[in-house]
Length: 116
Image (cartoon, rainbow, N blue to C red; front, side, top):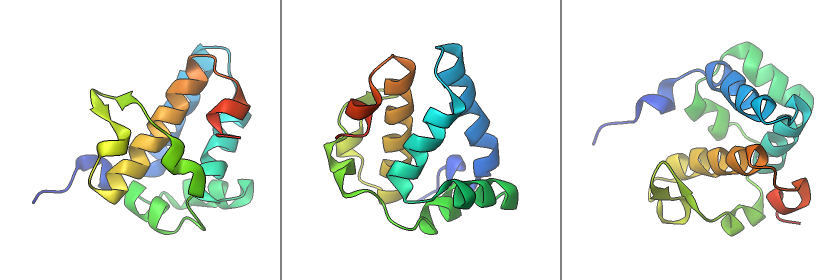
């Protein structure tokens, strides 16, 4: 079974794409950071440290303090795939984050994005 290229990509390369997507829709970097921290359990300093270390996406999620228990409430389609049906646990976490950033870019309220 082959691994996905995204697993080995530095998170520091993916992160600016999330920020750009949000900012194009008049959302902020702080909102992106809040979403990432909510999902992964990193604080802002921990997130910044991961970006500076240039850890790959696999390591970024492996070292995450805790994946938020409400992530199971994240449902929907990203790249034609239902996030709740993704079998690979790492790919599912990546898709969760993609879905949350999509919701942010579509103008959804932070309380709904963070499943509160």
